[in-house]
Image: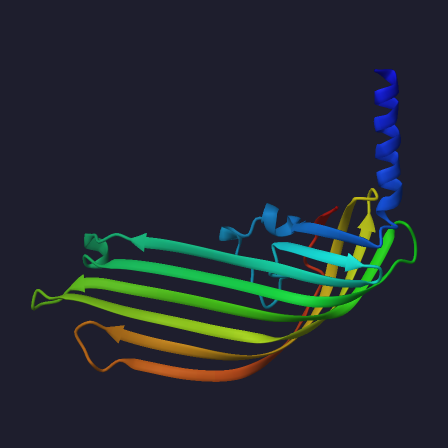
Length: 220
């Protein structure tokens, strides 16, 4: 029994000692700032300012890495009809998703630190909808829907800084630059009127995102 226990210890130490020198490895990280929320109501800080990614994953071969990221949020609220709101039902829905895929070049100045530099391609979609339902003076049920949809895509150079607590557990943060184009649709639609109002927009964004994420990473 003692020999088996000693063998397990030797294998464990060997795996940890190899963790930083593996030529091929995978890594998964969770943004602990978004996980905790830091007091943000509904966990919805501005994704144009705060790092939008909740989870990140990567596959690395020597100094080259491929990484993926996902971030998103959604929410819904219904205000029920009452005398104070004129017997109106008000439904509010919102959602936001952000996906990225990127290539990185890795530099490891010491056993405790790893730096990655590269570029992501990302796609972000946002939708905000307000639906109002009431009965008019002709006893008709009226449903008015106001919705804003935005689709965005572009490229984002990044610098990722990682500190290794142990060979397989680390903390990381990143500085992002985003260069993107977007299209947006703003619509007002009513079930009792054919005069729908639809406005279309397009534009570009140039955003710098400070290191507002703290990823807790596990290496395999």
